[in-house]
Length: 392
Image 1 (tube, rainbow, N blue to C red):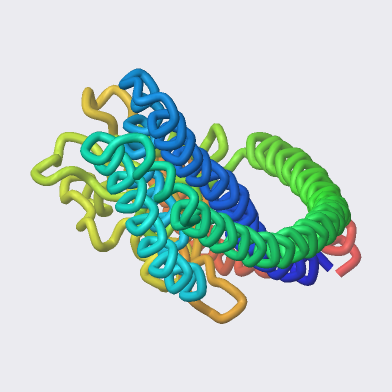
Image 2: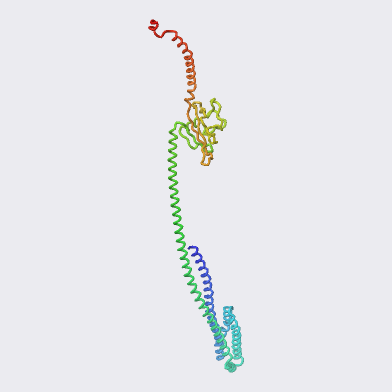
């Protein structure tokens, strides 16, 4: 809807611009026609001034009457040039001006000749020249030529006025069309924006719902994490979970205590033999690639591996049994490892005592086994009941 409105608005604006240019041209032509007619009327005025000045001078002989003649003669040429400039694009008017130019020159020449004749031959000769009608005929021809030019200009002006009216009418209609197209565009924009806002609100609602879901999932995950941590912390054995980069991501209190005792999270520092994990001899540091978490991350299964842990001051030591393995995704990719450390210090300390007890028990058992035959032999030789002996 908005696209159709925009196209219609663009087309209406283009037509309005074109029609407005046409209106401007026709309006300019109308204004030019009025100006031509006004200047044609002004051209007749100095011609009449020449005629009036000439006649008065011929009748009186007084020089003051030549002022009108001189003034009129000085205005004819500039006014004629002004009319020629205004009608330069009209072929009919240009031809008429050529004929008018000849008549004006003839009129000025006749007036000048009459004045010269008055000065040289006197009043009677000048009167005879006036009575001949040459000046009047020339003036009538000029009036007729100006009238024909004005009538032609009036005809052209009428057509231009009609064209200007038509152009103005179409301009007004197109202006209304532009307003209608603009209103249609505004309505289309309104409905488009309303639809987009509806979509935006729907997306916002979806985002809010998704955020609520994420928040609920986050809370549930946090609760599960807290629950898991509580379960781990309640265990007596140490638990440590590491990611693929050998970084411990989860452990319980016992696990952290063991890791702190070892002095390392997953592997010992280079050259560090004062504390950490050691082999059974309690002196040889456990190789870095044999650390339980490192082996689990590598994908190995750690089962019942016994290790000796000692801190840097040798104040605390502990025997550990490690069990664990890798953490894998559903696709089977190893993403970390988990190890459970069990404190077997008491068992290890009791092993020598248990050995002694076992050896002592075995010795006593052997001694008893050696003495039993002798006892049985002695019993067989002596009577079991004195009365029985007497009876015998």
